Length: 418
Image (tube, rainbow, N blue to C red; front, side, top):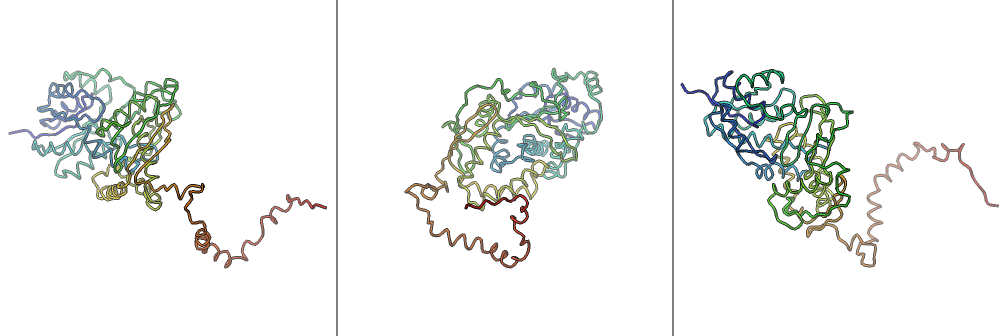
Protein backbone atom coordinates (compact mmCIF):
# COMPACT_ATOMS: atom_id res chain seq x y z
CA UNK A 1 0.00 0.00 0.00
CA UNK A 2 1.39 3.35 -1.06
CA UNK A 3 2.16 5.84 1.68
CA UNK A 4 0.37 9.16 1.94
CA UNK A 5 2.35 12.14 0.74
CA UNK A 6 2.95 15.41 2.55
CA UNK A 7 4.35 18.57 0.97
CA UNK A 8 6.72 20.39 3.34
CA UNK A 9 7.83 24.02 3.15
CA UNK A 10 11.56 23.38 3.39
CA UNK A 11 14.26 25.93 4.21
CA UNK A 12 17.29 23.69 4.64
CA UNK A 13 17.66 24.70 8.28
CA UNK A 14 17.56 22.56 11.41
CA UNK A 15 13.80 22.68 12.05
CA UNK A 16 12.60 21.65 8.61
CA UNK A 17 15.41 19.11 8.14
CA UNK A 18 14.41 17.40 11.38
CA UNK A 19 10.78 17.72 10.25
CA UNK A 20 11.43 15.46 7.24
CA UNK A 21 12.51 12.57 9.46
CA UNK A 22 9.87 13.36 12.12
CA UNK A 23 7.04 13.30 9.54
CA UNK A 24 8.28 9.90 8.39
CA UNK A 25 8.48 8.53 11.94
CA UNK A 26 5.32 10.09 13.33
CA UNK A 27 2.90 9.82 10.41
CA UNK A 28 4.70 7.48 7.98
CA UNK A 29 4.45 10.10 5.27
CA UNK A 30 6.45 10.25 2.08
CA UNK A 31 7.83 13.78 2.26
CA UNK A 32 8.06 16.12 -0.73
CA UNK A 33 10.26 19.10 0.15
CA UNK A 34 9.65 22.51 -1.46
CA UNK A 35 12.20 25.32 -1.14
CA UNK A 36 11.63 28.79 -2.56
CA UNK A 37 14.07 31.60 -3.21
CA UNK A 38 12.14 34.74 -2.34
CA UNK A 39 15.16 37.01 -2.44
CA UNK A 40 17.23 35.95 0.56
CA UNK A 41 20.05 34.64 -1.62
CA UNK A 42 19.42 30.98 -0.85
CA UNK A 43 21.63 28.30 -2.47
CA UNK A 44 18.83 26.31 -4.05
CA UNK A 45 21.07 23.51 -5.33
CA UNK A 46 22.43 22.86 -1.83
CA UNK A 47 18.96 22.98 -0.28
CA UNK A 48 17.54 20.63 -2.89
CA UNK A 49 20.27 18.05 -2.38
CA UNK A 50 20.09 18.28 1.41
CA UNK A 51 16.36 17.53 1.42
CA UNK A 52 16.98 14.34 -0.55
CA UNK A 53 19.90 13.38 1.70
CA UNK A 54 17.74 13.76 4.80
CA UNK A 55 15.06 11.52 3.31
CA UNK A 56 12.61 13.42 1.12
CA UNK A 57 11.34 11.39 -1.84
CA UNK A 58 11.31 14.50 -4.03
CA UNK A 59 12.72 18.01 -3.70
CA UNK A 60 11.45 21.09 -5.51
CA UNK A 61 13.44 24.31 -5.69
CA UNK A 62 11.70 27.35 -7.15
CA UNK A 63 12.95 30.85 -7.88
CA UNK A 64 9.94 32.89 -6.77
CA UNK A 65 11.49 36.37 -6.56
CA UNK A 66 9.59 37.78 -9.54
CA UNK A 67 6.30 36.28 -8.34
CA UNK A 68 6.77 37.75 -4.88
CA UNK A 69 7.60 41.19 -6.26
CA UNK A 70 4.83 41.43 -8.84
CA UNK A 71 1.91 39.73 -7.13
CA UNK A 72 2.47 40.35 -3.43
CA UNK A 73 4.94 43.18 -2.79
CA UNK A 74 3.54 45.50 -5.47
CA UNK A 75 -0.02 45.68 -4.05
CA UNK A 76 1.49 46.33 -0.61
CA UNK A 77 3.73 49.09 -1.97
CA UNK A 78 0.81 50.72 -3.78
CA UNK A 79 -1.01 50.67 -0.45
CA UNK A 80 2.03 52.15 1.35
CA UNK A 81 1.44 49.20 3.68
CA UNK A 82 3.04 49.51 7.12
CA UNK A 83 1.60 47.47 9.99
CA UNK A 84 1.16 49.77 12.99
CA UNK A 85 2.77 52.48 10.89
CA UNK A 86 6.22 50.83 11.03
CA UNK A 87 6.49 47.26 9.74
CA UNK A 88 6.54 46.86 5.92
CA UNK A 89 5.04 43.35 6.07
CA UNK A 90 8.16 41.43 5.06
CA UNK A 91 7.35 37.86 6.14
CA UNK A 92 3.61 38.51 5.94
CA UNK A 93 3.92 38.97 2.17
CA UNK A 94 5.96 35.85 1.40
CA UNK A 95 3.76 33.45 3.39
CA UNK A 96 0.71 33.55 1.10
CA UNK A 97 2.99 33.04 -1.93
CA UNK A 98 4.67 30.02 -0.32
CA UNK A 99 1.27 28.64 0.66
CA UNK A 100 -0.05 28.97 -2.89
CA UNK A 101 2.91 27.20 -4.46
CA UNK A 102 2.80 24.41 -1.87
CA UNK A 103 -0.88 23.76 -2.47
CA UNK A 104 -0.32 23.67 -6.25
CA UNK A 105 2.44 21.09 -5.79
CA UNK A 106 0.26 19.11 -3.36
CA UNK A 107 -2.44 18.85 -6.01
CA UNK A 108 0.10 17.96 -8.69
CA UNK A 109 1.69 15.22 -6.55
CA UNK A 110 -1.55 13.85 -5.14
CA UNK A 111 -0.54 14.68 -1.57
CA UNK A 112 -3.06 14.46 1.24
CA UNK A 113 -1.29 16.83 3.64
CA UNK A 114 0.79 19.94 3.74
CA UNK A 115 3.34 20.97 6.40
CA UNK A 116 5.27 24.00 7.62
CA UNK A 117 7.94 24.61 10.24
CA UNK A 118 6.27 27.34 12.30
CA UNK A 119 6.15 27.40 16.07
CA UNK A 120 2.99 27.77 18.14
CA UNK A 121 3.93 31.27 19.27
CA UNK A 122 4.31 33.35 16.13
CA UNK A 123 2.18 34.90 13.41
CA UNK A 124 3.38 32.70 10.55
CA UNK A 125 1.52 29.60 11.73
CA UNK A 126 -1.71 31.57 11.38
CA UNK A 127 -0.77 32.90 7.95
CA UNK A 128 0.10 29.46 6.62
CA UNK A 129 -2.84 27.62 8.15
CA UNK A 130 -5.42 30.19 7.05
CA UNK A 131 -3.94 30.38 3.53
CA UNK A 132 -3.90 26.57 3.19
CA UNK A 133 -7.50 26.43 4.37
CA UNK A 134 -8.55 29.08 1.85
CA UNK A 135 -6.69 27.48 -1.06
CA UNK A 136 -7.12 23.75 -0.34
CA UNK A 137 -9.49 23.05 2.55
CA UNK A 138 -9.38 19.33 1.78
CA UNK A 139 -5.70 19.04 2.72
CA UNK A 140 -4.57 18.15 6.23
CA UNK A 141 -2.21 20.65 7.86
CA UNK A 142 0.74 19.41 9.91
CA UNK A 143 3.04 21.70 11.91
CA UNK A 144 5.89 19.51 13.25
CA UNK A 145 7.64 22.19 15.34
CA UNK A 146 4.32 23.18 16.90
CA UNK A 147 3.51 19.54 17.63
CA UNK A 148 6.75 17.93 18.75
CA UNK A 149 7.47 20.30 21.68
CA UNK A 150 11.20 19.52 21.63
CA UNK A 151 13.70 21.88 23.21
CA UNK A 152 16.56 23.13 21.08
CA UNK A 153 18.89 20.64 22.73
CA UNK A 154 16.47 17.75 22.15
CA UNK A 155 16.07 18.75 18.52
CA UNK A 156 19.84 18.76 17.97
CA UNK A 157 20.12 15.36 19.67
CA UNK A 158 17.33 14.01 17.43
CA UNK A 159 19.19 15.28 14.38
CA UNK A 160 22.44 13.67 15.49
CA UNK A 161 20.73 10.34 16.22
CA UNK A 162 19.25 10.31 12.71
CA UNK A 163 22.34 11.44 10.83
CA UNK A 164 20.92 14.84 9.91
CA UNK A 165 23.61 17.44 9.25
CA UNK A 166 23.33 20.34 11.67
CA UNK A 167 23.68 23.81 10.05
CA UNK A 168 26.79 25.72 11.06
CA UNK A 169 24.67 28.66 12.25
CA UNK A 170 22.55 26.58 14.61
CA UNK A 171 23.93 28.53 17.60
CA UNK A 172 22.99 31.88 16.05
CA UNK A 173 21.30 33.81 18.89
CA UNK A 174 18.85 35.44 16.48
CA UNK A 175 15.84 34.14 14.58
CA UNK A 176 15.98 35.57 11.07
CA UNK A 177 13.61 35.62 8.12
CA UNK A 178 14.43 37.41 4.91
CA UNK A 179 13.08 38.05 1.45
CA UNK A 180 13.61 40.75 -1.16
CA UNK A 181 11.33 43.18 0.72
CA UNK A 182 13.51 43.06 3.83
CA UNK A 183 14.85 41.13 6.81
CA UNK A 184 13.30 40.45 10.20
CA UNK A 185 15.26 39.59 13.31
CA UNK A 186 14.21 38.56 16.80
CA UNK A 187 15.25 36.49 19.86
CA UNK A 188 18.42 36.66 21.92
CA UNK A 189 19.27 40.06 23.36
CA UNK A 190 16.62 41.62 21.09
CA UNK A 191 13.88 40.20 23.31
CA UNK A 192 14.65 42.96 25.83
CA UNK A 193 13.00 46.14 24.46
CA UNK A 194 15.48 48.24 26.47
CA UNK A 195 18.55 46.57 24.95
CA UNK A 196 20.30 48.41 22.14
CA UNK A 197 20.46 46.08 19.11
CA UNK A 198 24.08 44.97 18.54
CA UNK A 199 25.58 45.58 15.11
CA UNK A 200 25.76 41.82 14.48
CA UNK A 201 21.96 41.83 14.40
CA UNK A 202 22.08 43.76 11.10
CA UNK A 203 23.07 42.55 7.66
CA UNK A 204 21.37 44.67 4.99
CA UNK A 205 22.16 48.11 6.42
CA UNK A 206 25.35 49.94 7.35
CA UNK A 207 25.66 51.58 10.74
CA UNK A 208 25.43 55.36 10.66
CA UNK A 209 29.09 55.72 11.58
CA UNK A 210 30.08 53.50 8.62
CA UNK A 211 27.63 55.06 6.14
CA UNK A 212 29.12 57.42 3.52
CA UNK A 213 29.76 61.00 4.60
CA UNK A 214 28.33 62.30 1.32
CA UNK A 215 24.64 61.98 0.34
CA UNK A 216 23.61 60.01 -2.74
CA UNK A 217 20.88 61.14 -5.12
CA UNK A 218 18.76 58.72 -7.10
CA UNK A 219 15.64 58.78 -9.27
CA UNK A 220 12.81 56.26 -9.30
CA UNK A 221 10.34 56.11 -12.19
CA UNK A 222 6.79 54.86 -11.61
CA UNK A 223 4.16 53.76 -14.11
CA UNK A 224 0.63 53.38 -12.70
CA UNK A 225 2.02 53.03 -9.19
CA UNK A 226 4.69 50.49 -10.12
CA UNK A 227 8.43 51.24 -9.95
CA UNK A 228 9.81 50.55 -13.42
CA UNK A 229 13.22 52.25 -13.53
CA UNK A 230 16.06 53.17 -11.19
CA UNK A 231 18.27 56.09 -12.21
CA UNK A 232 16.88 55.85 -15.74
CA UNK A 233 17.54 52.12 -16.13
CA UNK A 234 14.45 50.00 -16.75
CA UNK A 235 14.44 46.95 -14.48
CA UNK A 236 12.11 44.09 -13.53
CA UNK A 237 10.57 44.89 -10.17
CA UNK A 238 12.42 42.18 -8.24
CA UNK A 239 15.79 43.33 -9.60
CA UNK A 240 14.98 46.98 -8.91
CA UNK A 241 14.13 46.13 -5.30
CA UNK A 242 17.30 44.10 -4.78
CA UNK A 243 19.49 46.85 -6.27
CA UNK A 244 17.78 49.45 -4.11
CA UNK A 245 18.38 47.30 -1.02
CA UNK A 246 22.11 47.61 -1.70
CA UNK A 247 22.06 51.34 -2.54
CA UNK A 248 19.89 52.45 0.37
CA UNK A 249 21.30 49.88 2.77
CA UNK A 250 24.81 51.25 2.25
CA UNK A 251 23.53 54.57 3.66
CA UNK A 252 21.98 52.91 6.71
CA UNK A 253 18.45 53.44 5.41
CA UNK A 254 15.72 51.08 6.54
CA UNK A 255 16.48 50.11 10.15
CA UNK A 256 13.26 49.66 12.12
CA UNK A 257 13.01 48.86 15.84
CA UNK A 258 9.41 47.89 16.53
CA UNK A 259 7.51 46.60 19.57
CA UNK A 260 4.52 45.19 17.75
CA UNK A 261 1.26 43.53 18.68
CA UNK A 262 1.32 40.00 17.35
CA UNK A 263 -1.82 38.38 16.06
CA UNK A 264 -1.61 35.67 18.75
CA UNK A 265 -2.05 38.29 21.47
CA UNK A 266 1.46 39.03 22.75
CA UNK A 267 3.84 41.91 22.19
CA UNK A 268 7.10 41.21 20.42
CA UNK A 269 10.22 43.31 19.89
CA UNK A 270 11.34 42.99 16.27
CA UNK A 271 14.28 44.45 14.40
CA UNK A 272 13.64 44.97 10.70
CA UNK A 273 15.86 46.03 7.84
CA UNK A 274 13.97 47.21 4.78
CA UNK A 275 16.10 49.63 2.73
CA UNK A 276 14.18 49.27 -0.54
CA UNK A 277 10.77 49.18 1.14
CA UNK A 278 11.37 52.35 3.15
CA UNK A 279 12.76 54.17 0.11
CA UNK A 280 10.07 53.07 -2.34
CA UNK A 281 7.21 53.80 0.04
CA UNK A 282 8.56 57.31 0.65
CA UNK A 283 8.85 57.92 -3.10
CA UNK A 284 5.44 56.43 -3.85
CA UNK A 285 3.70 58.52 -1.20
CA UNK A 286 5.17 61.73 -2.62
CA UNK A 287 4.12 60.86 -6.16
CA UNK A 288 0.60 60.15 -4.92
CA UNK A 289 0.56 63.56 -3.22
CA UNK A 290 1.14 65.05 -6.66
CA UNK A 291 -1.37 62.96 -8.63
CA UNK A 292 -4.32 62.00 -6.38
CA UNK A 293 -7.29 64.26 -5.75
CA UNK A 294 -7.81 65.54 -2.22
CA UNK A 295 -10.78 63.27 -1.58
CA UNK A 296 -8.89 60.12 -2.63
CA UNK A 297 -5.77 61.20 -0.74
CA UNK A 298 -7.80 61.70 2.43
CA UNK A 299 -9.67 58.40 2.23
CA UNK A 300 -6.95 56.07 0.93
CA UNK A 301 -5.02 55.89 4.26
CA UNK A 302 -8.08 54.27 5.85
CA UNK A 303 -7.97 51.50 3.24
CA UNK A 304 -4.18 51.27 3.58
CA UNK A 305 -4.41 50.67 7.32
CA UNK A 306 -7.10 48.02 6.93
CA UNK A 307 -5.18 46.23 4.16
CA UNK A 308 -1.99 46.29 6.24
CA UNK A 309 -3.85 44.65 9.11
CA UNK A 310 -5.47 42.05 6.86
CA UNK A 311 -2.09 41.05 5.39
CA UNK A 312 -0.43 40.92 8.80
CA UNK A 313 -3.32 38.84 10.15
CA UNK A 314 -2.88 36.23 7.41
CA UNK A 315 -6.00 37.14 5.44
CA UNK A 316 -4.41 37.55 2.00
CA UNK A 317 -6.92 35.15 0.40
CA UNK A 318 -10.00 36.58 2.14
CA UNK A 319 -12.75 38.48 0.28
CA UNK A 320 -11.86 41.54 2.37
CA UNK A 321 -8.31 41.67 1.04
CA UNK A 322 -9.51 41.20 -2.52
CA UNK A 323 -11.91 44.13 -2.17
CA UNK A 324 -9.31 46.37 -0.54
CA UNK A 325 -6.75 45.57 -3.25
CA UNK A 326 -9.31 46.50 -5.90
CA UNK A 327 -9.72 49.95 -4.37
CA UNK A 328 -5.94 50.43 -4.18
CA UNK A 329 -5.51 49.32 -7.79
CA UNK A 330 -8.11 51.83 -8.99
CA UNK A 331 -6.24 54.69 -7.29
CA UNK A 332 -2.98 53.88 -9.08
CA UNK A 333 -4.06 54.64 -12.64
CA UNK A 334 -2.62 58.17 -12.55
CA UNK A 335 0.36 57.54 -10.23
CA UNK A 336 3.05 57.82 -12.90
CA UNK A 337 6.16 59.98 -12.96
CA UNK A 338 9.59 60.40 -11.43
CA UNK A 339 10.69 60.98 -7.86
CA UNK A 340 14.14 62.24 -6.88
CA UNK A 341 15.48 61.21 -3.49
CA UNK A 342 18.57 61.76 -1.39
CA UNK A 343 20.02 59.03 0.83
CA UNK A 344 22.14 60.11 3.77
CA UNK A 345 23.02 58.62 7.15
CA UNK A 346 19.86 56.56 7.61
CA UNK A 347 17.51 59.12 6.09
CA UNK A 348 15.52 59.25 2.85
CA UNK A 349 14.54 62.73 1.72
CA UNK A 350 12.43 63.38 -1.34
CA UNK A 351 13.84 66.39 -3.17
CA UNK A 352 11.66 66.46 -6.29
CA UNK A 353 8.74 64.89 -8.07
CA UNK A 354 7.30 65.29 -11.58
CA UNK A 355 4.38 63.74 -13.45
CA UNK A 356 2.37 64.26 -16.62
CA UNK A 357 -0.67 63.50 -14.46
CA UNK A 358 0.33 66.09 -11.87
CA UNK A 359 -2.59 67.97 -10.30
CA UNK A 360 -0.19 70.66 -9.14
CA UNK A 361 -0.82 73.62 -11.46
CA UNK A 362 1.86 76.30 -11.34
CA UNK A 363 -0.43 79.07 -12.54
CA UNK A 364 -2.82 78.33 -9.67
CA UNK A 365 -0.14 77.89 -7.00
CA UNK A 366 2.17 80.77 -7.88
CA UNK A 367 2.19 84.19 -6.19
CA UNK A 368 3.84 85.81 -9.19
CA UNK A 369 2.16 87.83 -11.94
CA UNK A 370 1.42 84.53 -13.69
CA UNK A 371 -1.20 83.82 -11.00
CA UNK A 372 -4.53 82.72 -12.55
CA UNK A 373 -6.35 81.93 -9.31
CA UNK A 374 -9.70 83.75 -8.99
CA UNK A 375 -9.19 85.72 -5.77
CA UNK A 376 -12.64 87.29 -6.02
CA UNK A 377 -14.22 83.83 -5.77
CA UNK A 378 -12.57 83.27 -2.38
CA UNK A 379 -14.96 85.59 -0.49
CA UNK A 380 -18.08 83.69 -1.54
CA UNK A 381 -16.37 80.36 -0.85
CA UNK A 382 -15.38 81.44 2.65
CA UNK A 383 -18.93 82.70 3.31
CA UNK A 384 -20.51 79.36 2.37
CA UNK A 385 -17.77 77.25 3.97
CA UNK A 386 -18.13 79.09 7.27
CA UNK A 387 -21.93 79.29 7.19
CA UNK A 388 -22.58 76.31 9.56
CA UNK A 389 -20.12 77.77 12.07
CA UNK A 390 -21.72 81.21 11.75
CA UNK A 391 -25.23 79.84 12.30
CA UNK A 392 -24.11 77.83 15.32
CA UNK A 393 -22.42 80.87 16.84
CA UNK A 394 -25.55 83.02 16.43
CA UNK A 395 -27.88 80.38 17.87
CA UNK A 396 -25.63 79.74 20.85
CA UNK A 397 -24.33 83.28 21.38
CA UNK A 398 -25.47 83.43 25.03
CA UNK A 399 -23.46 80.38 26.01
CA UNK A 400 -19.89 80.73 27.15
CA UNK A 401 -20.22 84.48 26.80
CA UNK A 402 -17.49 85.26 29.30
CA UNK A 403 -14.65 86.60 27.21
CA UNK A 404 -11.08 85.41 27.36
CA UNK A 405 -10.09 88.86 28.51
CA UNK A 406 -12.45 88.60 31.48
CA UNK A 407 -11.08 85.18 32.40
CA UNK A 408 -7.55 86.56 32.25
CA UNK A 409 -8.45 89.86 33.98
CA UNK A 410 -6.01 89.64 36.95
CA UNK A 411 -3.11 89.46 34.52
CA UNK A 412 -4.36 92.02 31.97
CA UNK A 413 -2.49 95.30 32.04
CA UNK A 414 -3.76 98.31 30.13
CA UNK A 415 -1.61 101.22 29.08
CA UNK A 416 -3.29 104.50 28.16
CA UNK A 417 -1.36 107.04 26.15
CA UNK A 418 -1.84 110.55 27.52
